[in-house]
Length: 434
Image 1 (cartoon, rainbow, N blue to C red):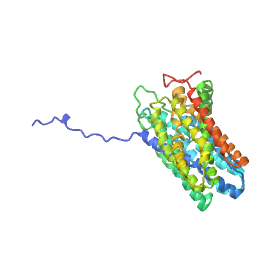
Image 2: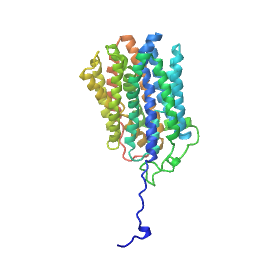
Image 3: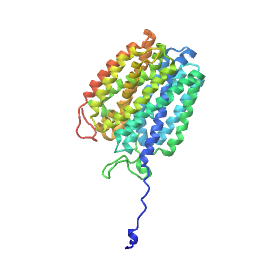
Image 4: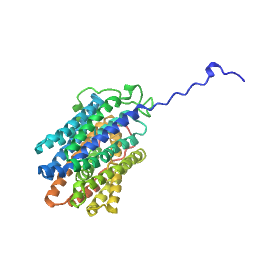
């Protein structure tokens, strides 16, 4: 038998390492879980705060509204700030703000302190870790599977709801509302070390390229100079000249009204009005989160394959139909029709995000994450209007029925707005005119 030459000797196969993009995505997932959980807490505390302090539902809902508005309005500025300071610094600072806002509520004695803590501090903190963060991570770190990763990271919002809501409801029932407020503060601080260790701003920082990138694909490579606020407003001015931006913003405002603003804020209280225990209602809302994980990931997969405009049209239509029938499903016990609503609505909850991110990236190029931040701001403004509006409807009419019917009709309008977006054949070019 002929002996192998030295250069023909078998060479050990190098160990395949996990691409750093997946570590960044995993860290972002955990961070977004926390941000969603932090925002979900006030919806469970409306009744305990009302009972202890005597504040009206509208007053408490105003704190939620401020939180929701800032969660959206801060988003484009946070995206621009991530371009100049980096994701790691912005996200770590945001977590500290959330911890401060939640922890300080245990000392409050008047409603303005609730507005400051849960509204301003937690709103700014979570707004810096909102869906524009998803667009930034996927835009910098992924070429292959962008839609799927967008779906997974968006689903983190539902997972955070799943993890926190039953725990918060149980803690509030057994130990009062101050205990879950402290738990949220501790959880926010616990995530900071993970962000500092694993979150990286650009692939070049660790000597690699975006996942699935080819040599001829140009990716963002470093900090952007200049004012972050100027960049955010500049992206808004350019996008506001296009028809697509206003159609996306209008549809996404209705998306916020029909999810975070109405269901996310008032579902537990509305169910309690019909005799359902708060812990049961919170568990149902958490189940929405379970099914939304599957629905949003599947939506991300579909976004890589189907026209995003058509997906949005279908999602909004189905959501509107489900909200119209919801008032007839409330009762002291969870009957099969309510279970059907939870499954159906859960699959659709934030399935709208991956196709909306894709449309912003497709239409507005490298400014896509910042433009999506502004579109997401409209989402949260809509959510805030629904949060305070539904609280006012409850105070004046004694029930939420009108709020559910109005939301269902508006979802039909959102479907029409989405389908009115003009198709585009060539991706990755910024849209310059309507």
